[in-house]
Length: 403
Image (cartoon, rainbow, N blue to C red; front, top):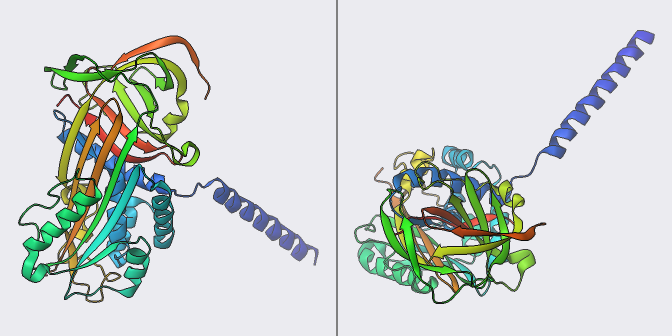
């Protein structure tokens, strides 16, 4: 009938509109990138670490931390897995592991090296699927250990492995009494980079006065451009942002930079800035005369309490942790997440290393202008980030406070 035909045409029209609506949502919905996952976690870590280190320099590697945690995530199941995905804001294990593999392969070259290892108690066994997804895929050094009878000797072996992979930058990664006869496995990630500046810094330079965050003054060794250089630069009412590139043979796909955020006020406390990826698009080539400190910073931290503040609790809960995808016995939990970093910045470039160890125990139950030269002296507390340029992934993040 005519009435039936009219209703059918209306339904078809309605369905077309509905399909168009959902297509438009999917079209505008941006896929979750690995940089988004890594940098979100970086921002949350920084929000916790910064207020606890207002009067001292610190540095950490969100890349190393997240890489180690995501390898551990591959073994999580049920509520533990869901909680991890909620904190990290993603849902596909396979997709994330594939992105990790591709990106890790991309960034490894002569000037930047990552390494992974799994030290497994010899009387313990892990699932073949976990071996396939993590151990084999990421070419982990897979080593059988005797934590049950010789935990101190195994600690030395792990520390020596980390020291070797970080060019002796990271020493004594795991302290005494961390490992014991209940340890079933230790999962380790390291990252080491040594890169030279593209820019021409003066090799021998003077010192200048530096104002620390508590208003105390100190004298720091400095370096500066011999002549003003065109660099990527941006400023607003709150801060200056500078991008100092490193020399690299593959600048199109594998360039790296140190991003510096320098607040215009000397009181840095509560003014730290999470690096907004979008703000990097505002940088323009500007002629800058830069004076900055040379510095070395070492930092180590136990991250379990930090992750618990971020809302990630189940993997560390002796009674509730579920690692069924790692081992059929499902009788382990994460007891420690140890992170240690060292960075040296001087006229030649930057040398930095980080290591993250996860200990699992058995449950007891451009365009720009160079007309006006900007003179910038980094003479009070500032932030810095070492980033992979193309993906804008943050590899290292720190605050220099004159110490």
